[in-house]
Length: 263
Image (tube, rainbow, N blue to C red; front, top):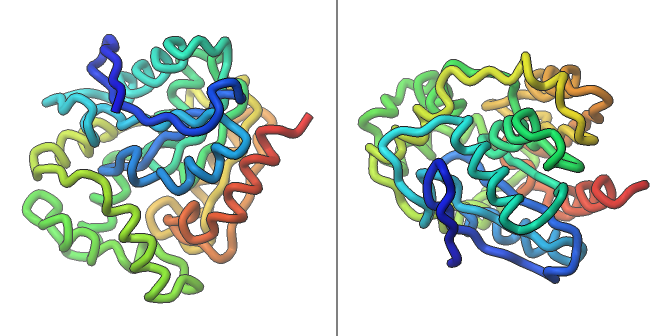
């Protein structure tokens, strides 16, 4: 994977599609990486030049002892500048939506259109940690498998059967395993984040997508985000939970493509 030394740290990334096509930066969720969003990137690459970074602390990017949501947003904005786009489309999923929104707040002129998938406007800790604690699991000592088991009721739609869940997890779990210390650093990077004061300053045309059965960032969280971004469009996928882009991938790719290409 190519990598780039940026002010907050070294970022690795994958690129998909025609380099002459409009630029789209696809940002993965917590503890994921570019491999975990590769099927989404490949669909979107039919119309866009998709750049999917491993964000700081994830995948092959630099594993810092400590970093913040602002650091992640700065790295994303510097990656956009590196590619020479005067402005670009940014699609962020879960934690990636926090990073994408923060990047659009930091540098409004860098982001033309913004898609926030399963977002929330603020949080005292990561949604994953909150859900684990609600299930009686100690996120400090639990294994990755135990955490995923604890999250089953929070992340899926009842419309997604067991076979499809296994197929999706086989993709998502391609992400490189993180040590407990590295997972904790990733979680700490978004503790106490609050985008509410900055969201009204976003100038990018914005689409917010939520899953009806999302137990981590429920639709009311997405609705709050959309209500704070001027002119944002809000949609709920009735057959999705927190795994929305994977549970309804065809609809997701079609909706995102339509939004990013409409006049």
